[in-house]
Image (cartoon, rainbow, N blue to C red; front, side, top):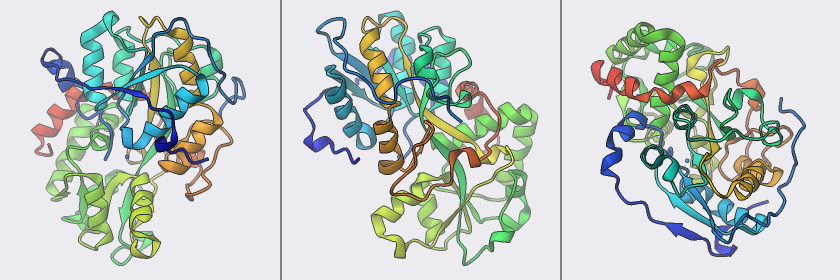
Length: 365
């Protein structure tokens, strides 16, 4: 079902102001922002309306952009009957704001673009443990070990490639293959993008600091081509300017929707075998521990994991649903359980300050 916010009931929106006091936290969480876009059977398939604890609205801090999820949040208000106020900003800004506000935050629910930001808030004791009926909707690898956050959708790191320059048999099969001298000057990446930072953070967690430094040093020596965004990386691959590009999978589907299938020559290559280059990251939600609207927040969580919302992610944003049995009716996505990303606790992607320092030291910031 396509959701269009233009036809939904108006929803209040809050304006995010700059937070000087949160600068240190923002630096720690920089890179968590919105990208340029076997589950158990427990839990309800569809959310139910709630009477709410008061007349106060449910306040959502959303690090997911209004362009991507505005219609879905309008639908949340319609389905649950809960009045909703949404504060849209980058995940990094909102996580910093929440760390600054602490228990005094007006937020009831945090809708994050990144598992690392949720992990940081969970470690700070700001998130409440979610009930089993919510957690059981999603595989354990897409929720925190302590039950304080759960994924709502997933996305895969992939290699976009130009088939006119690269045969399928020649494509890298591990992250180490990407630093082979044969790819000198032929790999595009977006050094300031959140997905790149998350990948390097995963590399640090999996390979250790020395292993990550060695790979990044070799990558830098291969003269990778820097772009301002993943969209531009993909455009360069599609135009034949470079052979390979490091992006998230859904950019190709967005490009195809924009320019038409006939104008897209680039293809996607998924690295499997639990390799760091095949990282599967998530967007997700956490309930603020100090919220006075627990019932409403749980109704929102149930909605975002409902079949309707999961179908929205599959069809509208070309992301992977995290609830079993939902597949896209629009996009031909490989099954999520076929991706074989690295075995990593996504909460550990919170250590982004160290990632940014390392990237600066090796000249890739």
